[in-house]
Image (cartoon, rainbow, N blue to C red):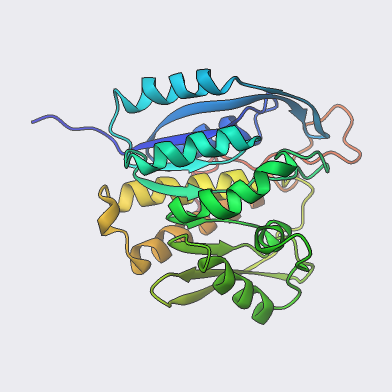
Length: 289
């Protein structure tokens, strides 16, 4: 009898410093016990101080990458991060419609922590109207959630406002919304998971005080994607209970990764640097008892 590991796919840009994007996703996929594959959408010059240049990949070559992976491997779950342009958004929408991405998580990457725009202005509407409806889960932070609703929507300042925005985002068609509260200022971080069947769940955890938060959004969405791939190979099996379990497991992993790297100093110029989380916390250092 033949066997195989769960297979996950990341559609995203690169990060040569290893903390975010494709690089973070592959580390996370490995840490969460899946075999990671990739479709690279852009070459990004960035490090712990921010993004300095983005070199987009031709859409036809991105399509060739899709063909190479999906024509050969049975993907159980997929996440997308940086898409960059309307053409790339439309390509991903078309591939999702083919039904070969498995459970599909959209991390709606729009602006880097450094302020560098990672999504062209004319692509935002394509994300709102075309990408969200083909997603099984979207994982926006507070500013991304507001922008996905409208250009003039204010960021949520309260838990009730987060619940309201999560429900409004569900109206745009995704199967579920995880609205992340990490951009807030409270000592406790609250994340809201709302699903299309009407379930709403809150996840509360202490804020980890650290400058090393580079790639946390990529890492969390990749961890959820991997957890879904492990917990249920068939998309029809992923109901609100299993998705909640996947989110809970992924948040626990991210908390350990943040805590392990909280005191790291990697940059030659540490002032203002945002280092990565410790993706290998459970592999190299071992999960605490």
